[in-house]
Length: 208
Length: 208
DNA sequence: CACCGATCTGGCCGCTGTCAAGATTATTTG
DNA sequence: CAAATAATCTTGACAGCGGCCAGATCGGTG
Image (tube, rainbow over all chains, first blue to last red; front, side, top):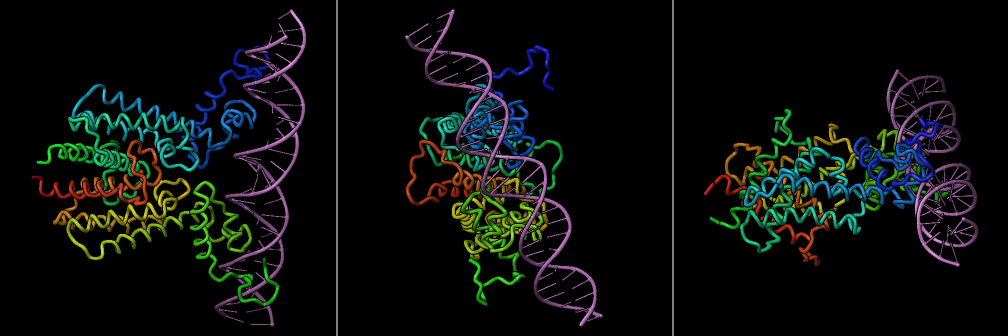
């Protein structure tokens, strides 16, 4: 593969931007092999560098996967913003929820990695910052749906829990028995749940 | 460590019930080291057998962890039954939810393993049977809360999603920012959510 | 008693993550 | 411009891991 002619694609001794390259390769690799199947050495192989090169940039495997998770949170934030697209009121919450669920369904491995893998340091500044940003989108949408800015952590937790729960169950839970409908439209299963979430949040601010 | 005197605790060549012993050790080990830190060899070491012995009973590390997950579902089922203790109506659902959340908080690693680890074969008969049994408890409680036996998969999904979501977020999500209250009572954070779930399910059967 | 299948041991292979030392390049300093 | 320093990457080594195999040991059945 490595050309001997002075080819611009031939890697010089210094890669230039190996940090970013490794993060991208890792993201792709973790999608293919799953969290457990992930390997630092395979990652280095695909990036065309020595097996120990990643260590210098990320320390250990947890460091690299933490970067992947952080980028996942950033993509999730962006996705929710795009879905909302300036909407206000109940529709804002509905669209945010849909963005959340769709993200999980389209990138299930990274989604699980972000929230529930023991190979990610969620407390790291890099990761918690990105996570807080994503959470901020949800907070904003709930506030818009409620209509007032008083922050009620209970209703916030409820909304987040329901959205996160349906995402997780759709990603990993084919133990939805007797549910039956397993045809193409995957997010269809979440429709009813999303509507109920929005309804419940609304009924909170207008109790009757 | 191996005694040379004819000690009854000294393992004979045949262990007698190595399958069960390994499953127990694995459960304990996975709690200590996490899913990723788990090791077949360490497992065999603690059981006092050769490193390849587990392979004969479980085939594979996935096989062993699948057994651990299945036992987790059985314990979850039992826990929910005990919490419900024959209650009916909305209180049945409320208690089931509390049992679910408490189980997750008391055994977080096994809980995540059961639902969202790629080292568990959730489709295996052993595991899906145990999972279905646990799900059955939830179905029964929702039916009792609704008051009628018509099975509405939408409301079922909603209830499960919310319960599962709050459990997952409490287990792995210290990214509940500005929530603040992090004192002893852990399940306190779930109280409001559980109440809202029950309320939402109730308001479905009595829309006004 | 002899046999056979189930159970368990020990050794082997390739793979992994991490560490340390050396080679190469970029950058700053004199 | 040259020399010293820092950053980057390679090579080599080590222990631990999972999976596989041949062989030793044991329990039950003829």
